[in-house]
Length: 174
Image: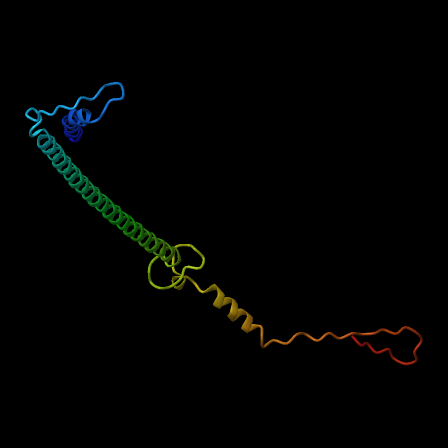
C-alpha cells in the first residue's frame, strides 16, 4: 500500500517536473498564452499535497503497526519469561521435596537397621533382636574375672640337694 501511494505521487509529480525542466537537446519555447496552463501549478501542488498527505498517513499507519507489533512481541516475551521462571521454580520445589523425602527415607532405613524392633535399644550384633532380650554373656565374663580376684597365686618353693658325706642322719627337705 505504501509503495503504491508513493508510486502514484511520483507519477503525478513527474510530468510537471519534466515539463518545467529544460532538456539539453531540446529547444525550449515559451508560450505566452496562459489559457492552457492556468491552474496547472495549483493542480500539481494539490497532487503533491495529496501525495504527501497519503505518504504521511502511510508512515503513521506503519509506525502504529510497528509499535503494536513491538508491544505484542514484548508482552509475549514477558509472558514467556514468566512461564519459564514459574517452571524453574516448580522444578526447584519438586527437586527439594524429592531430596527431603530421600533424606527421610535414608534416616528411616538407618534407624531400622540399628534398632529393628523400635524399642530404642541398639542391635550391636546384627541378629535382628535387640540386645536387651539376650543373655548377657559379657556380664558373665566379668563375674568370672571377679571370682578370680580373691585367689592368691601359689608360692613356689625351691629345694636344693647337697650330696656328700655327712655324719648323722640325713634330713629330707622336700
